[in-house]
Image (cartoon, rainbow over all chains, first blue to last red):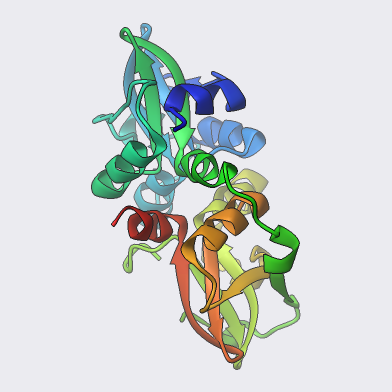
Length: 154
Length: 97
C-alpha cells in the first residue's frame, strides 16, 4: 500500500506558501499560475493557516469585498489539519471526508514536507489499476452563443 | 453555489447541457482578469467541454476519469438525460464507506 510519503516523492515536496499579510489577490495569482487549489500561510517559519479557492469564493466574492485590499489572514482557515508521511491514501480519504477538506499539509518531525490534495490521493488509489481512459471519456461540446436568460442551475 | 454548498453548476440552454462552471473558473477568469462577477454572464467563463459519465460507470472509473482529465465534477447522464452531478469529494466518501 502506498503512503503519503510516496505520493510526495512522485509529485514533489513543493508546498506553495504566502504570508498572512499577502494580499488575497496575489495569493490567487500564485494559485492560478501553479494550478493549485490552496496555499499554505506561513509566518516566522510557522504554519498559521491555509487558504483555498473555496475560502475565496465564499468569504470574499459573495460578501462584496475585494481581493486587492484584503490580506490572506482575513479569510484563511487557521485550524489546519495535517498528516504525517506514513499515512495511507485511505486514511487521508477518511480524514478529508470527515473534516470536509480537500488539502492536507504533511509534517514529519514537526517539519513541513509537502501538501497533498484530494486529487493526489484519488490518483494514488487508482494508479495501481489500469483503466481504458479513452473508452471512458465522453463529452458534450457546448456553445457560448446562448441567452443568459436560459442559464439555469440544476 | 454557496447557498447549496456546491462547487460547480451545470449550464443548460433549454434542455441542452452547454457548459459547466466551477469555483475553479472564478478567480482565474474573473478576478485575475480585472472583471467583476456582478456584470458578467456565466457563459463568459464556463467550460465548454463537459466531460460526463453514464450512470452505469463505477466509482473507480469516475476516479480514473477525474484524475486523467484533471476535473473535480462529473455530470451524470441516464438515457441522454442529465440526472445529477458528482464531485471528487462524493466519490471519495462513497469509496471509503
